[in-house]
Image (cartoon, rainbow over all chains, first blue to last red; front, side, top):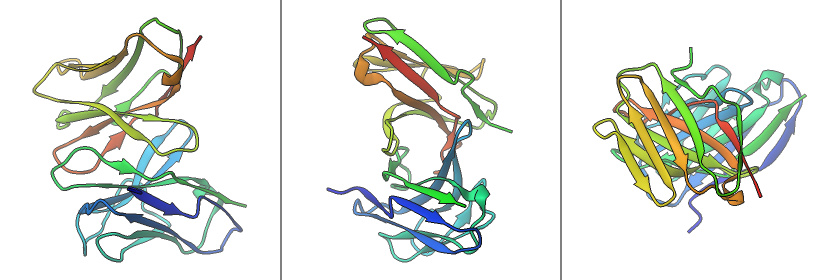
Length: 112
Length: 111
């Protein structure tokens, strides 16, 4: 059982480049999330999708877009990467009404 | 403005002793609290949780205490083991599905 799978694990971008972070879960969860982790800041919610077909902004959505492609997949897109987006990105999923979220292994992104 | 605060960036404890990690929150709407553990190069994993209607929840070596009047919770690990060395995140829910995390505390258990 793979759980939550993120690709890629590492990425280096130049300022202004675009890229999409992929996330897939095999637990049939309705809700999916994208977080970023920065030193001293904990995990901050970027966007979330409570159920297939819906997406909502979290605490730090600027500079990002998301797509809930189907129930399994939730992607995060950086249209024009900036050095401030250098971070570790985590995707997570949970079941509606359930409190525990399951996380992927993370994507370490560096923007130079 | 951080709604969930972990004011100790790090904690060092001798193996076999008790580890106490603290967390404060400001939002009185939070009704469920969780602790996550994170090893380097891995995603956070759920450790233990507590509902706001309780003041204590225990799971093996891990106990979480909640003081609603003080808006404070703590995680006790007894006895601490070297494998407990990790980053511990406190998180809270306000009745919805969005987890709000603290900044984390690095726990080092020395053998």
